[in-house]
Image 1 (cartoon, rainbow, N blue to C red):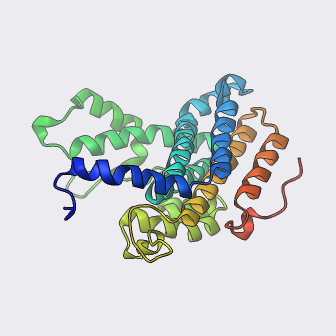
Image 2: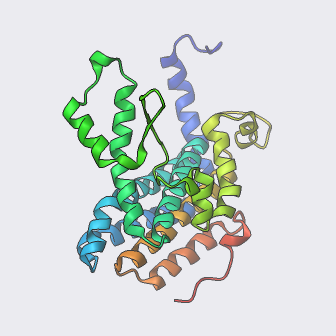
Image 3: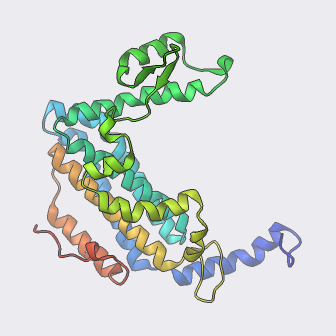
Length: 289
């Protein structure tokens, strides 16, 4: 409780404008414009995405996996908002989400039988429904016996029985013991280096590590809820790049047109707007277009 203000309304009237002014002074509008462009680029390619897929199998797989791209599109939009408000926790959480989505998508695309894993990813929703329903008291469960029976018949890979006969659900969506952790999925997708670097960093925000004090300490030593501009900017840049990379992977896999020159132009603007903060892998030469 503030020692200077009698009510939170008084506090808001006094501090609110000062807070907004402080954030405004810290904003990086050229970089924000690049993030906004990333969202529009993503949305532009996603427009009529399913209709542009070339084969029946691709269309069926997109129906099962399209939600990954939709969530990534939303996360990319949120990155821009988090960057504008210098919300370190917002951009860290969204970058983490984008990375996990990207890993699952690339994992599926790189399997010998991607349709199999796309189908498992889609059907695993049934197991998630059962697990969620089972956490409720018996009288509060929403799934009917018929619906529970249907899901169990449709999802045999994840249904395990203990010696007592009690059902146990395997919570590995791949239903493959080789990939029973997210780290293993990331490694199989060729993204282990990114996992080792950014997964650990973003976990500090997800789990509330005391190390976060470094991300909220201002140059004068004050610790407050406004993220350090350099940390926020770096995380936003990496998250946006991952989202566009995943979109390129998806477009290539589904046979949807994606002008690499357009992507390269955006990447060049990203580097120009944030080169002083980016790690070496983001400052590498642009791909051939």
